[in-house]
Length: 330
Ligand code: SAM
Ligand code: SF4
Image 1: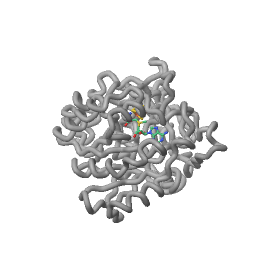
Image 2: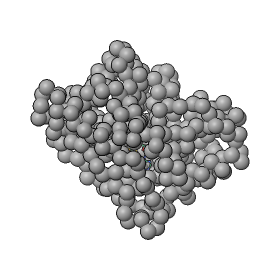
Image 3: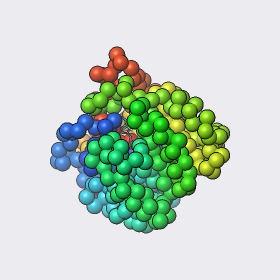
């Protein structure tokens, strides 16, 4: 599938639930209302929609959420999608997780064919971890990362850079990840959904983070590409890599190859725009799947050129889109 701007759409992110066992301060407010269960696609329906994208040339699937590993029986979806890896129709099946359930599922994920996962971690300090996630247990996440590596999964750490929170710790995260053979990507906070804090108080431009890191680490541009938005640098001292995901300071939309499916079957062609396509209605209307296929093609035909995120004091009470990140999926 090729969109109106000539971009080849090969990557689907699937948010399998909007629910989560954490309440990260930049992602959610403390009291969240989640989607009614009746609106959520069954695992069979999620698989049908995902398979339709694979038929249309999608080669990479990332399962995300909310916290994907809290969805009941989620390993059934991983096992079934893993069959497309075996047949060669899919080149990668991967996952973004907060790590809380990895101790339980790492082995099953590897058996299903998952080889690389992203684990989100914003601090190495257990008390601060509790503060930023509100509900998370640091030791449990560390056990999850241990289990993932022991099972043979390549772990990449995702860290949202937050002013006044982890600003002074990012070099320690680079060192810790390097020592464990993990890459790390830093992410700029995006204005998605209303939260309890001011975005402008949290926003830390990665141009500043990179300049600060370059004082202590030798960073050279890397040829490494994952098909995602991270711009990678090799870190000479650790032998690892550090990536920068910069939706605010450097807009990477021109090379965007992805679309996002929510757990209710809405397809978002851009994380930062409201336009969507109701694939659930198409799926339930026509068991032959022809309406679903047509709805997907029609939606790709109106993928927008990009987002225009702004974080400053004037825009703080107006997020770019009203959906929180846990709905669209990271
Ligand atoms: N619960 C899983 C996790 O935390 O990895 C998967 C879903 S989470 C929404 C995916 C990623 O989005 C995480 O790395 C998280 O840190 C990031 N994220 C959440 N809200 C964000 C925001 N407003 N701006 C930038 N990144 C955000
Ligand atoms: Fe949950 Fe992930 Fe959002 Fe944190 S970032 S609240 S772990 S969905």
